[in-house]
Image (cartoon, rainbow, N blue to C red):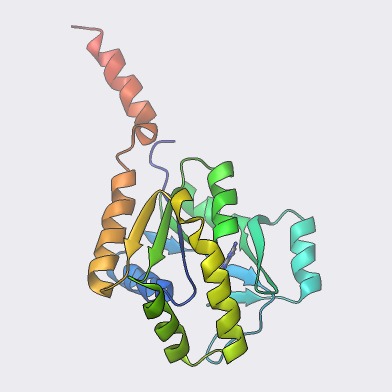
Length: 206
Ligand code: 5GP
């Protein structure tokens, strides 16, 4: 549809620096709307309900599934994560570029439902770098880190299913690349159907 925002799905291994990238993108440009997911995971220190996530009990989350309130949802290391519908659709309609920072199963569900969505995968330059970043964050127990690394190993098998890969070795450059990529999506033919028809019609006079 013309003038509709771009639906951009950003995935990457836990610890790839997606959070920092998203914050920088939102600070620099005002055309983005970052969807806030619902999750059954417990809040980390400093996380606020309604800011990082909508924190839900399993019962509440399963109610949301039943009432068809989610665009997609998935399980990740023992917890549910899902994208509430209303925010995504109202912002796309208003012409905002909507960012979904979600894991791989959810991303592939989105691509199936909305083929026009752009799927971007963020990775550190190497696996060793990922381990160092996760350990350095200090927010997770060694068991949780191990679970996240093992999940990352699984996820790496599906990197090929994404439209674009961004190497996050330098935040500033990575943010600009992500912005350029998403903005380029506005030029796609399917976003200009009305304009194309109008020009075709006007051309008939020649
Ligand atoms: P974390 O616990 O580190 O905040 O998130 C764990 C994983 O869940 C991350 O890969 C994150 O991108 C993903 N995630 C966050 N929200 C959603 C969501 O709404 N749907 C899906 N499928 N994954 C999500």
